[in-house]
Amino acid sequence: MPKINGNEIRPGNVLEHNDGLWAAVKVDHVKPGKGGAFAQVELRNLRNGSKLNERFRSADKVERVRLEQKDQQFLYEDSGMLVFMDAETYEQIQLPAELLGDRRPFLQDGMTIVVEFYEEEALNATVPQKVTCKIVETEPVVKGQTAANSFKPAILDNGVKVMVPPFVGQDEDIVVNTETMEYSERA
View 1 (tube, rainbow, N blue to C red):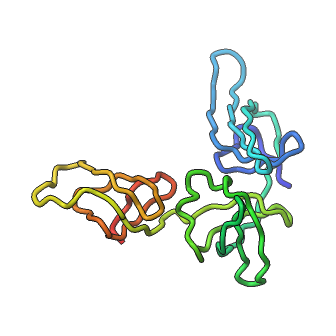
View 2 (cartoon, rainbow, N blue to C red):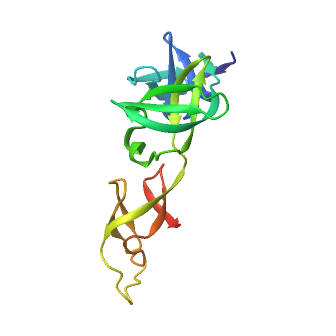
View 3 (cartoon, rainbow, N blue to C red):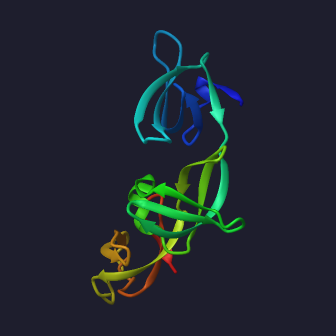
């Protein structure tokens, strides 16, 4: 496995550290007046979800782990576990629903998502960046109300609340960016 210096750690990197697999969530490069520069890294354990703040000096070496990414189709949820199927081999895997966090409502039946594997162990899953949803409740469209940067609240078919432009009405399909949880465009 490739070793990288402590100052080369970037958000999203997966590291082998303290006998575990950790994903770098947030990285701040600090250059104090005295002493050498270091990277203050917020890590999340991929196996149990615990968090850790760690300092890496530029001289420190860490193991960077490459995860294999496979497309998996979402089948159903069963008692807090999400069941996915490999479209090529038809093998099924289960991952805990809390792994997706606040993006869980955007997971739709039959949706293809990317699951990351370390050797044969499924560790992480990511929902597509853009997902189409239907607006089930919002204020009606008012003609002539086109003030710049004015948004109104809307509730989607999955229960998530987002802010939408005033010209978007009820029962319309919109595209939502799942990373920022914001309206992106009309579908």
